[in-house]
Image 1 (cartoon, protein in one colour):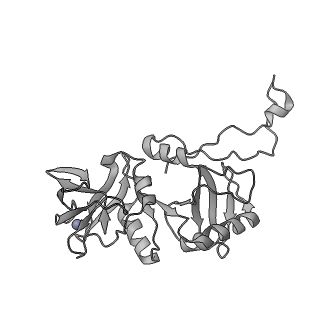
Image 2: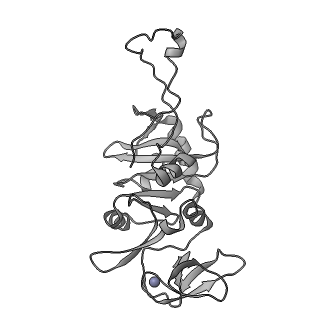
Image 3: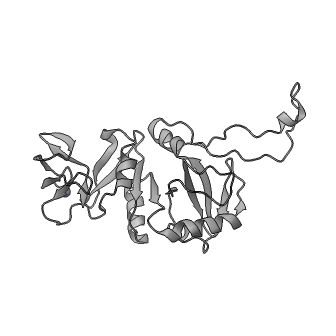
Length: 258
Ligand SMILES: [Zn+2]
């Protein structure tokens, strides 16, 4: 398991050559690994379990963590059973963000959700090629969801990544990077897919703007997505507005905080 931050002379620091640190969780000595190929990181001297949930850190993890203040990153928490776990990011409201690249078993997911509540998963949608193609296929057949933001209902059995995360109690944000989605009017860059699971139905998939998700976690501003096109007539005609203007969708729709 690898970490971005270890304790050096009482302060949490990133790895640098010649530094010696201790693990903030188990207090074992950790070594600064500063090679040319992998990200600079800290590693335990022996792989005796510290936090068994940790996975090796990728550039994708590091990029996500770096959107947030250092003091929010890699937060150690001790559970009632005495085990320590390290949250990727814990925001000022206490919500945990877990950036998940590797596969995770349903059992492990349940125990992390129970430990870190409330939390949000951010899943790397680029690890397996077929994840994007099956998600796009599912999207092109999905029906619209009656939600504030433009969204679709993806039934189970159509998209492998949606199926793998089924049953999550907390939102799952899929990060496919910048790609072209089958609905041509969707932006090619800056989108994330916010999944909320509904038992026996599947997932409501809402495209949201990446920057607004990060801003939401940082300061609580609303998450922005695409406005839903309102087909029903406003209840009262608005005086002074030309008819077509009264039917324009709102510029931005808002969602409540997690
Ligand atoms: Zn440790």
